[in-house]
Image (cartoon, rainbow, N blue to C red; front, side, top):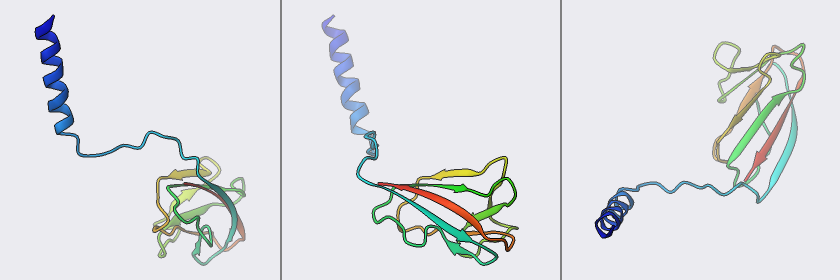
Length: 118
């Protein structure tokens, strides 16, 4: 029994010596911010003003039954953007507030809801 405990102790030291990353397992509970941004045929930042310290964001195409929205960087277009459509109207991303998200539609005014958490 003593040998088993020594082996477990040594393995525990070896495993902890190689840990290189701290993983946050606590829930995000400091603040939540919800916004609505109307996007059209020109790329618009979503949300227009982000939550300072954001750690996660979810986007939802409110008009998904009739209109598609494409999301990405400032150069987003229907050809290169991530689509929010009737079959997949929402996306959740672990992005901090240093990353701006832009969305565009085919020209129609479309409301995109965002939910940010830190």
